[in-house]
Length: 197
Image (tube, rainbow, N blue to C red; front, side, top):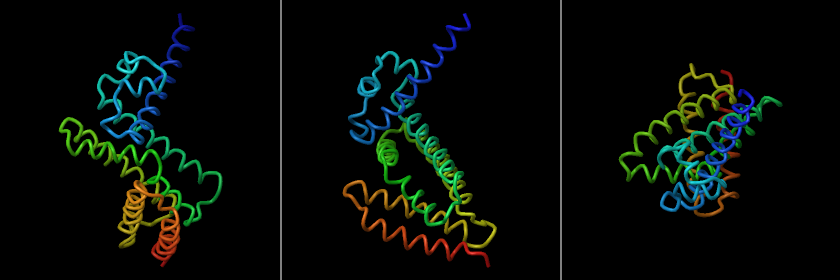
């Protein structure tokens, strides 16, 4: 019997991952209104029943999807700088990249939906607080920031807030050229602010 359970559990994990990835894509491309469990199940290549087995409600599916991809991106960010030294300009660029892709678009759609849907708001608020804390921790670690120094914590948070703003600017139009100049300037600001006294 143990041999049946192993492959079955593996298939279940794969199905779950496909649903989560499909949910983020749908949310990023079609927004909250166009992203239903049925649409996500079709994109993931599974039945609606299988989707509901893993995620009983629409809110379960989409909050889990944003959380899953945020965790994947955090892990990828850490891995990126394990193989080579973390030069601050590269770290600033990588942090900004977190806010300009499909994950940020999906999270943004979830934020907008949560602002109008009472049952979703507490879940999204809690999720965003957790993701925000983790992103801040990673930024501090990769930048080699000493938060015991006055103003350093606020500088790192300002960098993340700026990155989020650049992500918002990129939602409607391709803001690459301006973003590159802003990222270069912020890299200089971060280097100066975090330099050893």
